[in-house]
Length: 279
Image (cartoon, rainbow, N blue to C red; front, side):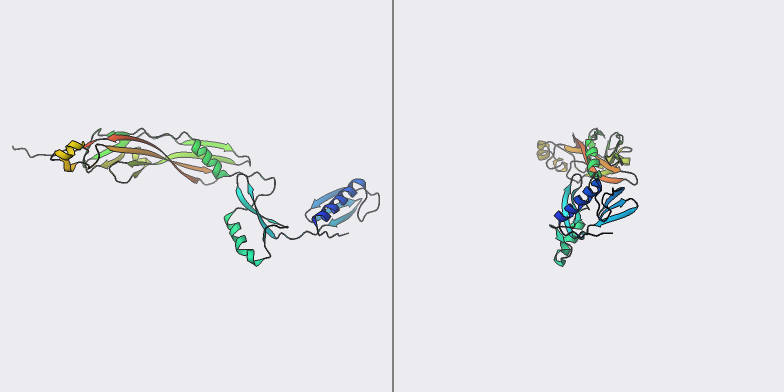
């Protein structure tokens, strides 16, 4: 068995070319002249050829994987890999240790050459955004609100949206979107309230206003003006569907996030005052 140590890229290529030519022409390294190779196999350690029951091996001694490098993979982004040759972060240099740790922590490893890379989350987001996410068509009762009594908003529940496709790497991607909650901004300056979908689509989203709405002249001149909202003639109510997206490629679901679809309308609120009546 003959071993040849090669120290440069040009020399390694020359040895490789010599071995291939030998296998094709019948001139062998360490074999009888004129013998044709029965087969040859290439590995990272060299090339092994069999000649009529004997094996001749030419071994190329390669340097160790020492330098950490990065590249940009379509669908994956920046990734890291080890190289035998510079440039790169030197794994034998202690001064590079922190940068090597940071690079490997921040980025995924690069896939082997020829591997189909699919960013599943990105593709799932594309599908989620492309769904026809319907906005609400809210109904409110009573049609004119009364202070300190519930105003109730209802809406019909939209169907869950689903998509299934086979990815280039063979996995099956499932994407779903459903309404998880119904946020309502009642327009009186209080924060929006996110009602569970089960509540909003059943008994409805309820809210009691503290102040009625009045025209400016009424607020200024009428004795009941102080019980009006100080600036609004009506409340602008905004009802939203909070669509939740999720995906899986087998196994458990992963939540993508939430997209909102909204509708607004103006709502007038009055008050009812009781007066004692003599019998």
